Amino acid sequence: MTRQYGAIRNYIRRLPLALAEKYGDQMTYTENQVAGLVIELQLNRQYILYALLMYSDREVIHSKGIAEHEITLMLKTIKTAKGVSLA
View 1: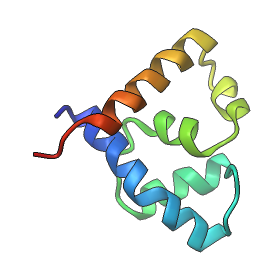
View 2: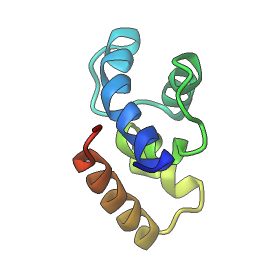
View 3: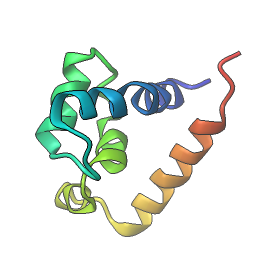
């Protein structure tokens, strides 16, 4: 498993519950909320754009200069990471 996939899987496993517990159950969270919890939970910050894509409004990603075709590739990477075995 690559480091990138591991980081994404950790975001998937740890962030939803932590975000909901800290900020309430919402459809999306602010950039500061997501980034702050990545730091607080000591998750890998190198791939934080994936966490923002999963848990923030799409405009946050667009504000980072990420084009739509790059977002599509990122979403494919997230889908692949979800299917990677931990074994």
